[in-house]
Image (tube, rainbow, N blue to C red; front, side, top):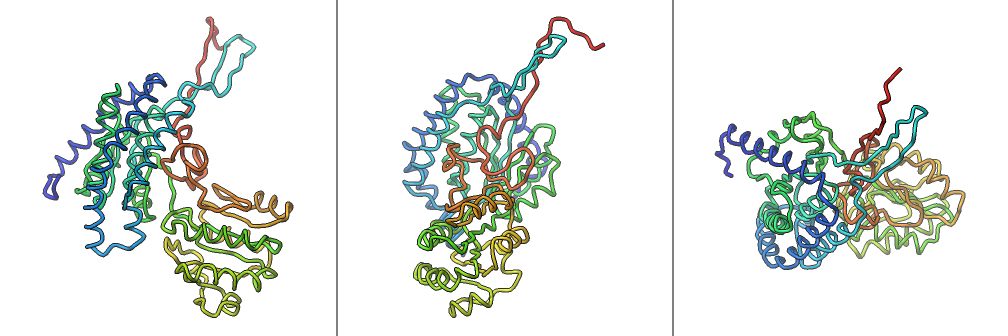
Amino acid sequence: MTDEMRPEDVERLVAETCRRAREAARQLARLESSVKARALEAMAAGLRGGAEDILTANARDVADSEAAGRSAAFVDRLRLDPKRIDGMAQALGEIALLSDPVGSVESAWRRPNGIEISRVRVPIGVIAVIYESRPDVTSDCAALCLKSGNACILRGGSEAARSSGAIAGILLTRGIEAGLPRGFLQLVPAQDRGTLTALLRREDLIDLVVPRGGEGLIRHVVETTRIPVIKQYKGVCHVYVHRDANLEMALSICENAKCQRPATCNAMETVLVHREAAPRFLPLLAERLGPLGVTLHGCPETCRLVPAAKLADESTYDVEWLDLELSVKVVDGLEAAADHIAAHGTGHSEAIVTESYGAAERFLREVDAAAVYVNASTRLTDGGQFGLGAEIGISTQKLHARGPVGVRELTTCKYVIRGSGQLRQ
């Protein structure tokens, strides 16, 4: 597709893609679990066998992004290596082994008039995933949609077009060979921005949209479409170090949460420290993270204890850094930490480090987020880490799905009623 493609041609392409997906969705909904599992295993083998082609395509995408002056965090999300490709393949294998939610009975009961009612899980239908820069999303979303019986339309970013195309091509070929309908997976070209607008107008053929990317992309999708959207705006994640925390554990958790992969939505962006622990903990934190390149942005008390820290203002605590930058604040206690999280958190992942059972339970009860941790890193908020195989996204909303969105969250329910001639009186 070129920039000169006419709007009517874009509309025609998107309409045909959506219709193929709708037809495929009907077939996928009734596929045997064994067929889906075999297809996923074949797709995983295809990724491993095609790794060289994927890496060649990805190298060109990375080179273009570096030449365009993209940030290091952006390039990190884009870059693939043999380990990441093997991780993609491993995720497909794990998803293949998961229990199939389609057709499972959530509950069943018999009414006094003799009718039998069951609540059964069924696929959502056609799911469109709009994403930026991360080509591994192509594999995760295709696999999760397949396992849950949904047809998948992918619209990646132009910066990862070659990488996503190579991955999707392998998955499509292997899936069709394994007996899947041709429309089970489709990748809409991203070089023309009109394809996004056209997709978001197809509420007649698309049942759900999942945007994966920056806050700007997600807000654009939400404001443009009438299709239901699973939303994750950003991840301003906190770690609160309580006064009785094991400081070595706290240092390890903070290092992992900030530095293991800082460009992700589940990385720690703010550390809150109890006033009684701050004189001991903050100099140790600066000593631990400084050599790793982390810049601290702190309150006046933080700057007094760590002179190298930059002075923060209130707006600093709303920043999703996605880099080796960290907001720091000294607080009077657990209640103040919870108040700060309520004011500045985004409902993604929050953690407390403490040896106090009472403090831990209170934090779990009072802090509202998709994932709330005691003595563990926020980086664990992930479909694979939770045993879901992968995730199609991490939802920070409260309706339908919250947290890592896996296979079960990509299904809905219908009521199945069996009777013997009953009528309403």
